[in-house]
Image (cartoon, rainbow, N blue to C red):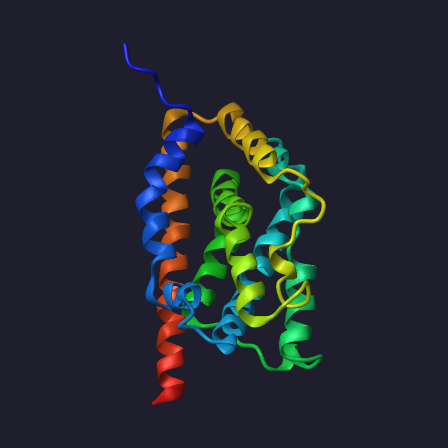
Length: 217
């Protein structure tokens, strides 16, 4: 008899294609390959600020939820690091300059909507962002450091100084996914919402590419 996949393993398997599509979107592929510029990186960090502001606002509301709260950790908090990065990359007036792209606005609205009514949906977005930051995000941070001469300023978003062992942290998080008291139908809903989160990421990269093209034209 074949082994039955755990929920966390099924989640990874079912989202593998969407993850690959997102990370190979043109804007991100250019940034990773060296074709992207420092300005491209700043544009990405800017959009991250809006997304993580919504996610971490929702995190504060989820601290009393019996299911979602077990996934929360102050060690994951990214917003102060993003704000320090933007102050370094743009200057102290950055809040007066940054604006969300259309996909970012839709992404933020989705996070806020599911977090207001559906803990499982919140966990889906929490999982997609933070475990991604602890996985491929670590490579991105190292690459941006080498490419643009950053040390810690500018890439603080990718530095999880309070997490000594990211792999162990991710494994514990996946154990919590497997232990969540969700029905089979609810697990399907959570997986579907993870796919929604990946689609927003892909569409954000497309938005960033269009915004860049408009500036060049």
